[in-house]
Image 1 (spheres, rainbow, N blue to C red):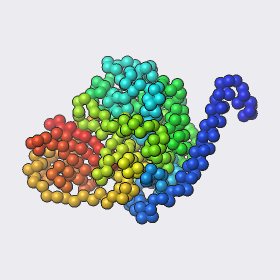
Image 2: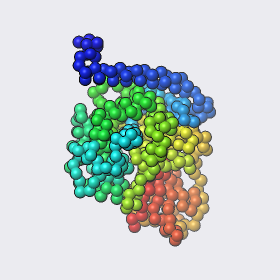
Image 3: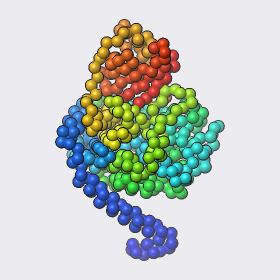
Image 4: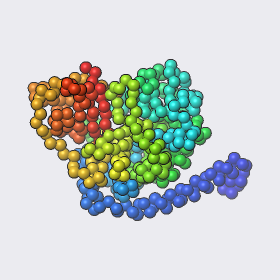
Length: 485
C-alpha cells in the first residue's frame, strides 16, 4: 500500500494523515527556526565562552565525566551550546552540542508545564480528585489532587531503596527496572497504585517520581490523548524541541550517548541497565542541551503558558506540617545562585546527571547534561549560571564568630527521608549525614559553607538564637530541613 492509498483509506486514517501532515509542516517550520537559532549562537561574549569552557574542562578533569553537553540562555535568547568529551567511549564518538542524554527528573518540569497548559484551557481541574481523570488509580483514604501530586504533597511513596548508589537497585524492581512497557502509564501504576499513602495529602512533602506517573495518567484523561503525544504536540513542538523524546531502548535515537557510572575503585564503567518506559512523566525523557535551552526560552517568553500560570507553577508549595522540604512549586525547584533567585530542576539516574537552571529576572539560564551518574550536574550548572549572569565566582571567605552561637544550631534537622545532624566539637561546627561529618565554616553569624564541596547552610533562628530550621543551598536549589530535636 502506498502513502497515497493509506491517506485516503477511511475517515479515521484520513484524519490521522492530515494530523501527520500538519505536524510535519510545523516541524519543518521549527527546523528552520532551530537552524537560525543555532547560527546565532555566538551572542555570548568571547570572554564568557572562554570561562564556560574552562569551567567545564576543570569539572571534567576532577569528576572524570565521560562527556558533557551544555547550553546557555541570555537576555531571553538561546546564545551558546557546546559538547565536551566522549559520548561513547568504546567507539570514540565525541560529544556534540546536540548529543542526546537522559534528563531524569527534569522530565517533571516538562510534565508539569503540560498539566498547567491543560489547566489554563479549562481541561484539567488541579483541585479535583485525580480519579476524575485517572480512574485506574484506586481511591485512597483521603482524596488526592493533581496540584498535590505536582508539588509532591500527595503522600505517594518514593522508591524503596536509594537511587544512589545504583548498585542497590537490584533489590527494588522499580529503580533497576528491566522490563519494557508499551503502555508506560499503565505499567508504571502497577508498581505502586495499591500501596498505602505515606502521609495524608497536603500534610507532608515527600518527593515522588511515582506521583508523576499519576499526573501523566491525568493528562491522558483530561486531553483524550496519549501522554507522550500530548506533550509532544503542546510543549515540545511549540518550543522547537525536536530531539526530545521518551527514553525507549528499542528506538534508534540519533546522537544518543552511552551511559556510564563508576565502580567502587573509581573506574568508569557502563552504567546499570535501565528501561525507563514505566516512568516517562517523572523521569523518562531524553533531550539535548540545545532543546532544553529552547524550553527555557519558551518558558521565559510565555510561548507555552501564560505568565500568570508560569508564576503559579513557580510558587513554592507548603505542606501543612511545615516540615523539611525542597523549596518546590509545581514541577519546579526554587533556589538562589550567588544571591540571584532561580528556578529549575535536576535529574539523576543510571548513566546520567542533568541540571536546568533559569534566573527569571535576568532572562538567563543554563543547561548541563552529563552521561554519568557519578558526576553532579547541579554544581557545574550553578557555576555556569554565575558566568552568564556576570557574577563574581562564588568564593566563600571565613569570618570570625562567637562559638557560643553554635549551641543554638546543634541538633537534628529532618528533610523528607534523611536527617542532617549539626554537631559542635570545641570551636568547630560539623554537618553530619549518614554518619559522615564535614566541617562547616562561618561567613556570617547564620551563614556557613563547606570547603569539601560547593554547598552552604543558612540557619533560621527564633528570637533566642535557637535554630528552628536550616536551608541547604546547593547547585542553585534550596532544601529546608526542620529541627526535630
